[in-house]
Amino acid sequence: MRAISGLWRWRHNPLCRATDLAEAWLALVALLLVLLVAPVVGILVGGAAEDALQRSVRDQHETRHLVGAFVIRRLDRSLRDTDPETSSGRDLRSRVLAHWTAPDGTTRRGTVMAGLTDPRPGDRFALWTDRQGRLVARPLDSATATTHAVLAGFGAALLTAGLFEAGRRLVLWRMVRRRYARWDQAWDRAGPDWGRTGAGS
Image (tube, rainbow, N blue to C red; front, side, top):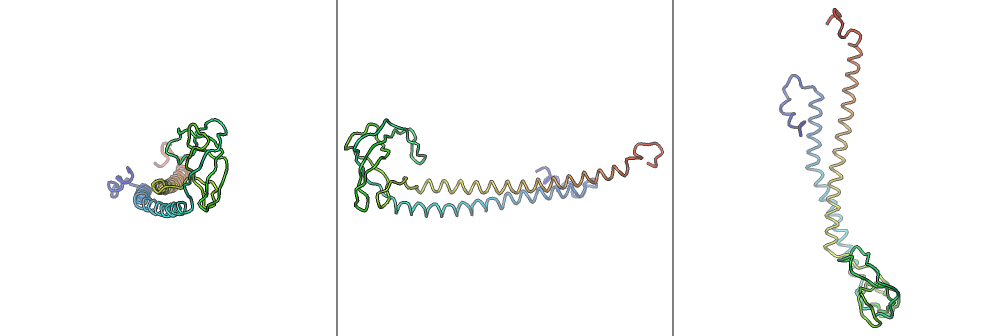
């Protein structure tokens, strides 16, 4: 920002070097790119992610079904649910042998995690299956998909801004190196006589 504010003040200053103006213009261009292009990239990426995720939500809700299952017997002690999609990771879940009827009418049986703290034979609980009765994860909900899309858009905007800033710093680094090289050449030319009395200075 200092370089940008200095751009106006220094434009007619006789002490202003061409490199000072170039650095200020570089900072201004980078700032405009960050303010104008990065948000557009974020909106485009977020919109594309939203469309893809909402399509996935619809597909999952069409192909996954909530069915009732019945406990045959409990298999071991209660375990904590580690599914990040559940509303609370503190809900106790139990590993049980259960049977259920698939949406296509077939009867299935297998080991599942039941949302029961003290499962007993015959207890009913819900689980998600596909059309053939195979166990599947709970389908993604629309709100979660939107949250993921917003995060993707925000991340894309930040990444774009970071790339512009990295490009600005790279160009600035090259400009400073070139300036130092010119200074070294000037010192090499003036070096042998600099500071001597009567050396023509």
